Image: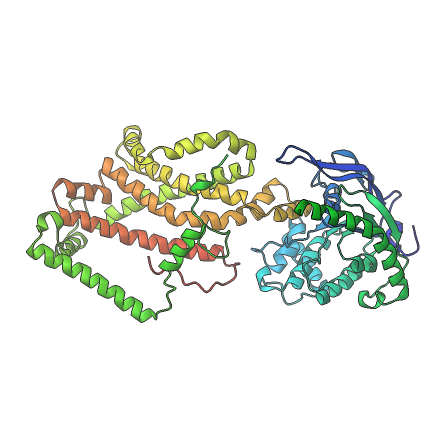
Length: 280
Length: 297
């Protein structure tokens, strides 16, 4: 366990929280030719480690998350969570989606309590714990609002509380802040780091944004142009706790940014060239 | 598999996008022309006065009131029905019978339609297998089944309930099917990750998502239920509004036919109002829209 990982995480059992071995996912398409989203992906995520995944647009980063979450089975290769092969949705997995996935017909309280209700926690206790989490994500006073009465950033806070209340040991995030404006996004990044620190959860966070990837991560995984595979892994040895808007101005950050971008640039260029040829 | 062309699109702007044509229709019915309420209502009253007045006048001069009746005769008939009663007991008991048949048929049809629609909407294989049979059943002129039901169930209430049921079922079924299929995949995935089982998923995600589609169909469906009950009574009955209209027809009593129509129309409008209230309750979570309720119909 490297020095910058979350200290509580090292207390967990032996072995990685998530492990992919030569995982390949092929989708059937209408045209008949199968489409390979990811190919021979091998990576481990330690307990309590924050890993971000960057790669060119549409390379299959999200597919990696759906394999780990059990929403999609791997075509070839193995995926394990907590040492157990993924077959259906594993226990202790949380997933924050790119698009809004809060229920529009439930209040903030109802949305946050949802996971506990599904897990048959008695109503009173579920509500009390939901209120606690609503407080923790800074939405106290908004318990009875419906999602359409909230701003985009507030809905993300609801989604965050909804996911974190189940206390996942593996947290998957698919560009959760992609749709937010820059200021709100940085605020949410700090909130995420604050809520995650001490949770001991292993995080896999997919993003397009290199600044976000480096500011949050213990390690940045760079994926190749699709079909995606792991190209490079960059250790981020910046001290925690971090403040996103401060850390990105330090020279260490700039060096890391250059290092990751050098690795990613080729892949982005390949993707762009393909896009250009398919347009032409 | 394409069971989706038989749907009634939800009319609420926050619901899934309905087909363009019906949107414009609803805008028109909701009176979004920008004129003041008073002007609009005054013109409406004028139209009714003009229509009834010209009818009355025409039947007192050039047309034969025996065939076409007159507003004053219809009014007279209504007054008799409501004060002295009809040839088959009081008018209220006849309305009650028809309404009871329509409501039973409606409730059973809605329950069956929602259950089967939602199940097939979530089971692609089953819906593909059953698609031709369902489309075939939908193509049957179901109103004719009323005759069959009278043979099967006799002149009592059950034959009318059955007729109303088959009419309601298909209207609701296709919408529930569509609604269950259009559920946002993100919401389903999110709920599954949060630990929802099959039943919890149905109750907390699929049914609420399909609600706007189902409610949209219920407006049409209650009309169908009334039609089913009345046609059932037409075919053979011992009580009810359909029987009164049928007897008026047999006696060449045109005012009786009109009066029966009018009573049923009022009942249908009241039911429509009730369903709108229910819709508002069930969709209270939606953003408030600027549209006024459908006062125009």
